[in-house]
Each structure stands twice: as C-alpha cells, then as structure tokens.
Image (cartoon, rainbow, N blue to C red; front, side):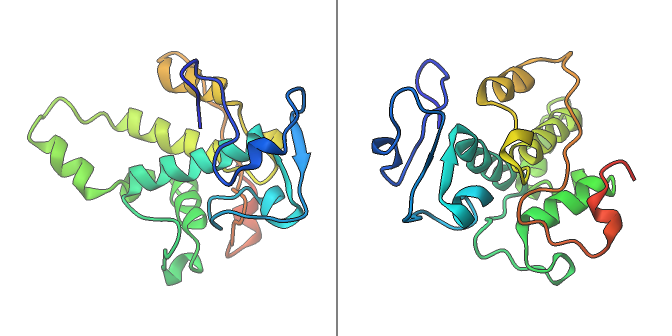
Length: 175
C-alpha cells in the first residue's frame, strides 16, 4: 500500500493503469477485488482513490490485531460482520478483548513488553481507516504519523463502512 518513500499507492487489481498521474479519484464500471477489503465507495459505485487503499489497510491492521480474517468471519452477536465486531467492542470499552491471544501469549514471557495503549492505538487507527466515508478516513501519511507519535491525540472513529448495528445508539460514537 505504500512505496519506499511512504507514499500511498493504488495497489492490486491493476487499477493504477486507470489513474492519470494528476488524478486523486477515478471511476470504473467493472469492480474487481476481494470483498471485505474494498472500500464501500469502490465496491458499490466503482469510485476509488488513495482513501480506498486506506480502507484496505485498516482492515488488515484489524486482522493482525485480532488474529481473525475479515473474509469468512462469523459471529452471531455481530451479525456476521468483522468490522461490526471490532467497532462494537471498541465502542463498549472492550477493545482489548479482541486482541489475538497469540499476541498476548507471546508477550507474557516478556513482562514489560505488552503495552495495551499501543494495541488500543492500533485498533483506533484501524477503525479510523475503515470509516464509511472516504473523507472521514485519514491519509496514509497521517496514519504513519499517528502510529509513530506518542504525543498525538488520535480522533475518535465513527462506525465503520459496512457496519451492521443492533441499535441506533451504535451510530453515535459519543454515546
């Protein structure tokens, strides 16, 4: 998703050929790719931009932290939706409960290594990357900055794209 200079690039599916050098957004009539990693605007309308890659990156970050795959995820409590699972646990203050036990187990032998705040930061950034609207997602340079900075105040995410909520309260991130 990033080149060697940390510049976001359109990746996969040969979409880069459709982009003119000076374009920041493009449209295609034929949507190709792996559902679950495609941004909502691309999967539904064929519109893609650098923010489409940001969405995919967010899904991958959440997969790494949880040890679960977006595709094939099944959980009745979250209506069979990986992003709803991550969002609901975040919103309810239970984000650390979704962390892959392998991560916790591998760090338990090194008592001072596990840093819950860093894991929470990764989850928060992952959720910011999968926001429903492209304009609500950070740029990849902002993502790199947030990941690398200790003093950064990270915005609170809103419900992600493809969110399947159980109540209207799920749509208000401030409640």
